[in-house]
Length: 114
Image 1 (spheres, rainbow, N blue to C red):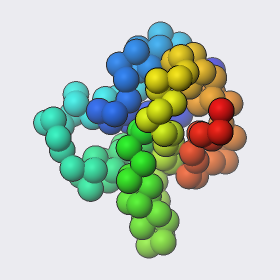
Image 2 (image 1 turned 90 degrees about the vertical axis):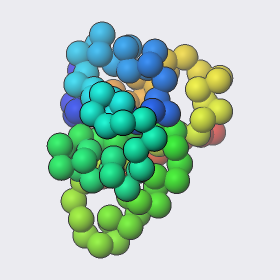
Image 3 (image 1 turned 90 degrees about the horizontal axis):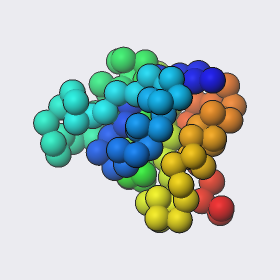
Image 4 (image 1 turned 45 degrees about the vertical axis):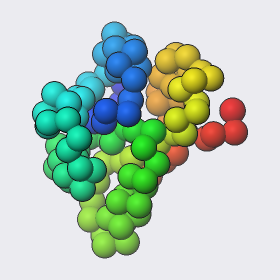
């Protein structure tokens, strides 16, 4: 059962977004809100303001999240994974991992050792 709203950037495959939507997740795509190539420094604050967990395989976003944590700025969460996982794993694998994330997670990364 979906537990949190997600903000997916352009790095998240549409098949994953569709799979989440089919399972009742509240997913908003960056491209539906902002022009293409909008900077992460704009997208991340938007997701935070909207109370959405930012989902991406754009690992540099972790730098922004770490900066926010250091500065004590609140945000719902960040979920990242390595791009190469998209080539190896099906959307169902990602959906199961999202579903199984701990409820108290502030900053999380889907393990890449799979």
